[in-house]
Image 1 (cartoon, rainbow, N blue to C red):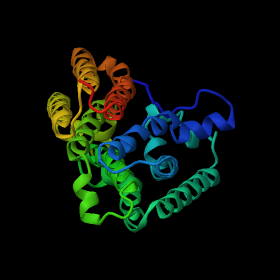
Image 2 (tube, rainbow, N blue to C red; image 1 turned 60 degrees about the vertical axis):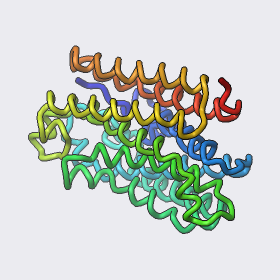
Image 3 (cartoon, rainbow, N blue to C red; image 1 turned 180 degrees about the vertical axis):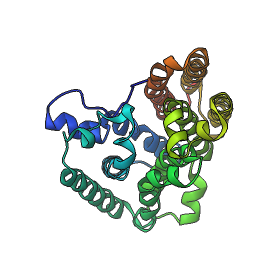
Length: 299
């Protein structure tokens, strides 16, 4: 399987940079932070939305650039990733480091401008995001590490709009069902994605659940994670006063999550198709929650 969402398909330098940071994945991760903000119960201002958006864009851009740099030795050996920007030379190593630096500056400055708690806690998501490459070199569960990276956007969204509230109150307001649901959903689809590198990971000692337990058990674990995520997203309706708009979004996204697993179990050739379902899944789930909250939990 040669599918790789980070591959370069055009000669444009701008296109190569966008592939380096996988801009579509970065943009579609923004609603996770918005969910954390709008479900928190704190008032949300336009200024806070702009700053949290800049923070997330900066963090994900710098983290993806850094992890591409850190994975150069692995990616240069894996035929599936030979078309990535740094491997092909479409992006110079120095330019990638500039993305890391500029993205990190944007992130930390935005965090400082939001409030004291985002300023004080900003190093935690940065460390988690930057250490993903190291996780798969140290243990077999990097999928949970990636899930935590996305889930922290939910927590960050809440803390970003906490204003003068105490840290304890801000933490209590985080929609934890969404946080855990995102963590498990992302970990599940990353397990599915990693089946494409099963043989490579085994040969080179790269940590992944498929390499540790085999593909069949890995797909069973992905399904288990996804079933728990669906349950948590369903519980969120009752915990956060959501109504029929969210219920519809939850039903559609749940069906797509299950379909993703069905496709993969039918044939591993369907992994790229199954993986690409996750962008609409995330958008439907998060935007329906936000719309429902703005509508006042319309029944």
